[in-house]
Image (cartoon, rainbow, N blue to C red):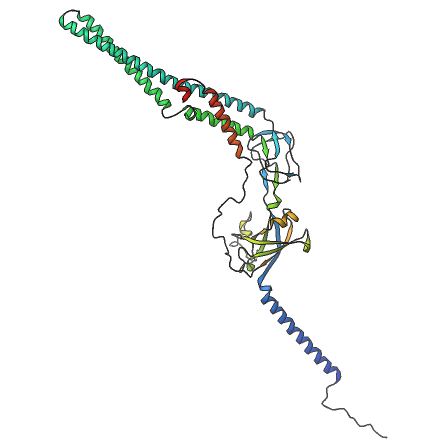
Length: 398
């Protein structure tokens, strides 16, 4: 039987083995390329970015609390309402404060008139001293004439004794008048009616009564939206009772809680991109690192951890980082307190400080809604002093 000769090469690898090697080489090449890509991404981009989704919207929650005791008679705004700075939010029954204010006004008017009497007493005592001086001069001259007559025997010694008694009485009357003048002058020395201590004390009482009356009306310190209203009509409130809050949503910021291992290259002023869950990736906020917290969140917790007691497990801590947002973007896309966000910090710029180097040069937040209260009280005090100081002569000039 004829046989077919074997023409295959003994050293040649089977076809499947060759394909497997090529596949393995391809996989190895992909792994190498992937590793190079990861390395390049980390070197050029990844190491210069830190992100966290443990970030939430924060802002000022301005609590509206009364400074005086009162019964609520009017509520000017409810949850969700927009209120302007100075807008009335609550009114108390003003009856008690009005009575106290009227009593303080009457007390100031009475005090001014009494102080005017002190100045008049001084003028009267000055005139009395002058009269006593004239009487003393007359008594001294009379005694001198009678002494000459007594020495010549023209009058009896008894008459000279009476003249001497009149001289001593006139001297005593002058000394007494002078002492009364000194005492009365001490009550008004280096003062005018408006600066007299008694008037100043009555004016301070009136100023306090005016403030107590003004504080029966609670106004919004800032422009914002009302939240957390708990007050009800007819409720009797004590000073410090929380009634509602006003939240200025144009002043919100982001509190991003970064791991302590992420803060090595983080600096104040670095640019930040913020994405809120409310709007998603359609809206990206631009911000900057405003400050890095002075401690971890657990250090300032109500019950901070006591790592020196019992068993201990190391836990990576987080530090709050405040992110300042662009006000114009906030106006176009407003945020609410407590919303979740994702924060990405660009670490390329390392020129900023880790901690603030200078104290604030001006107040971070201010309000002027209370500035006019004392000015109105001072105007009332000046009017009452003027009305009750009317008169003629030196008293009126003073």
